[in-house]
Image (cartoon, rainbow, N blue to C red):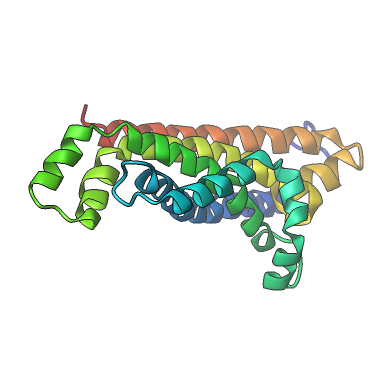
Length: 221
């Protein structure tokens, strides 16, 4: 291994891998929470929805569309003042979390909306006829029936997040992107770039495999 990758500091590589996993998992949790909220708001406030409200629907949809349209690298710069206010710096894995969450939650929110729209309307009507409250319909019908699609969408979002962490790393967030850029590319030590690329691909495959396994297990169709 030393002959193939002569310029790699393996201790630093382990730290960079850990930072990438930390950013991905922490941002994925925030994305899950915010994305489900956004998807539910869009779905429930739409015309004919359980919480029909034109203004809530308009504002939520606009928020999702705007943040989906902004390229991630630009989004990082746009929210730098917020990041510095919260953490006192824009460098490091934790400081990257606001950008990662805001960059991926709107995308996942749309996937949540699509998943909810696939729920059989007859099931919802049956729950209403039985006197189920809105809260019960949301948690016992909508989210439960759409769970396989929600997990599948979260898997897709996780893969995108891994790519975002590499971009964030290139401007000082840490992780494999940071290590590949500052210690590999800028020094022309391409073996570092190669090993970081391989590790990112392996992480993507692991997340995809876990997501697919969970989806198959909970999908009763």
